[in-house]
Length: 518
Image (cartoon, rainbow, N blue to C red; front, side, top):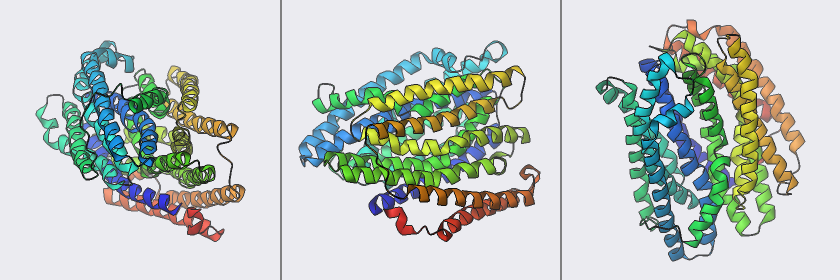
């Protein structure tokens, strides 16, 4: 498993750069644009094509495409591999062009669908959302083709360059805030154009890299190609299952439009912080384990498949549990340190911290799902994750209504926290359901030592929590620290104290680096 660990480390290192750039971007976005009004319209207009990006790019397409790609690659026929990529690229481009065109034409309908609460005095935000959607929808074409290139590069062990593309996206968005936004009467419209430019630049970065492998696609209409049809059959069930977290976020976005102005923004900023551990490790782990599992399945190596899956689950929990706990304990300090400047008020900080605290409950589940879902896709089983996704979305909607509706009726200021809690709990449910299906199918046989592994991890988390809470109590309220350098300094100290305590506790209980490789 040392190869998987190295690949995950490379991906995570590049993703760390992206997350740092993302934090700078979010900090500037909150400081310059605040929350509510046209900024809420941009967040909805940004989330919809982002959801479709997860469907057509990083999620459904990749999960169906990579196993078929590796199956052809294992046969050693490079001409057949190039022919498949040519036809797949042509088919994907045709589909996303049609979807993007439909989105541009039906932008007002799409805006109404995902923000049903904006009516009356807030109807102006619907118009702003529709106008921004007409700009952000074409982004889907660039980012989907970029994801195809990234999937090919990942399958050949080239993880660094695809992992760098989000850095480019964030840097482009930062440039758009200062150069494009001031040129528009509705300043967030400049951010919408920044999204489109970022998609083009990301594709321009990856496309030439395929030429160095001799696999740069020539777009050929490929719907009749047998392997493209195979991908299509595998992809249809994954359209829903691979993007269940994004579906849940869109459900939350629609419900948030019924709440007070700014609710979408608070949930957005909370989700951005949740994405840090998921992007830094969860996505990295899922990205590198899918090609590995698909090769083990293609080689009929059941023991290797099981060992890789078991290793992935342990790594997901080893990082996911303390990450979720840390975000819960440091929700307000994190939000205050990163966002609480300029137009982003103390009230915005407290409201975002509420949703971050409860959404962080789901991080272990989100992290595990990044490993468990590829376990099915590697075997070209896309129907089982779809069943789990349908149940998960149903549970999320039920929990959202059950928790949020009473809070909204009673006029509770943090009613959006009910949406975040439902998202987190649904993430845990999705991971449990996927694992249960794996166990029932006999695809996961736990390796020895799970009980001792979990006990060490939980005791180390307890030690971490005590250290972080002690330091938090010493500092007091983060929002009263006027100097941003004090906020950053104390936050880094709290994070470092928690991380060092967690690692030291694991070492003290006998866990060693070699345990991460087997």
